[in-house]
Image 1 (cartoon, rainbow, N blue to C red):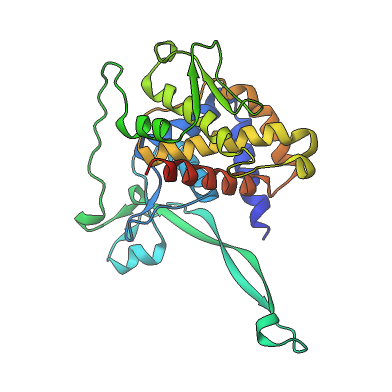
Image 2: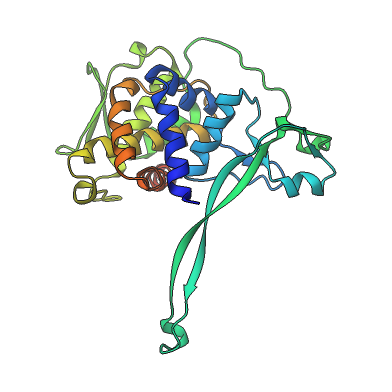
Length: 285
């Protein structure tokens, strides 16, 4: 089983369904925040976030909580007949033992291993403490999001308003954004601002992201994918509703090309995006 290829094909399939649908899938599911294990409360990370968000949107699950078959069985619950699990991935350290080398010189590597999850919406008989409470989302006037504002303010980034588009300038280390009032919602403003802030983390004085050697002409598209995922992870942690990134559709075809050419690209992008999101949160402390 080639786990990297299976998961990459899944992400490509989501994108190829159409740019509008892809945008809806990768943003609407963030309304419930990051996917978490219902038993432990621990959030999933990296590529598994994308897989589970996509599955939530495709199957219209209202819950962001997941369990393994064994975890469900351990609490006396039952997977509903006919329900299918979703495959996720973790990395296990595997040793390469060499008799000619001493113990402290033995080599090891990471091996991708699959595991399978069910959404709590697929499970009957869960105890009350593992069931989601109903979430009611109400509309309202534009209002600043306290945590998102804190992140933007405490990041130390040079953020400027009054532009006709949103972009990060590496040469000046400056983020440029349209005025807040020009966005369709506060969630869209923050998602866009955090997309550019993710680019900002890649500066050589911070996380120093360089993709030219591996991705060549696709390096720009790959960095945009990292920024998109980084913003998605960040707004997911903030639990923001209906956050989308303006001009998302402009890059989808480029992303598909990158993923088709490199089956490990989405894993690399998710890893860099997670590091960027963690860096952003660390600046807000």
